[in-house]
Length: 92
Image (cartoon, rainbow, N blue to C red):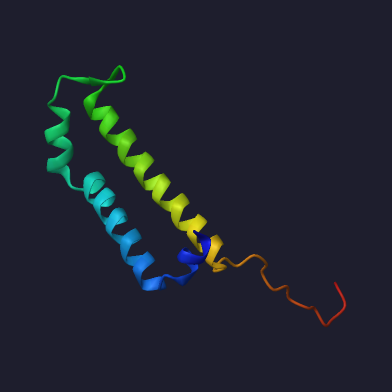
């Protein structure tokens, strides 16, 4: 599975992540979607539907970001170590 992920072009992964991220941002930032959800009287796991709407949106965004991080780790695209600056003078 890891070799398949490494073989995928970066543009494919970025496009897939961008689509998921755009949908969740649209759900969070587009008021008519929330207003349509806030008028429902039903509950989801004991929570009002409007609150479950925000929690679900936050979970999807969080999982998408975690997946993006995990895929970049598999592909070796993370900056593991930052270069350190070498000082050439005496400390004051």
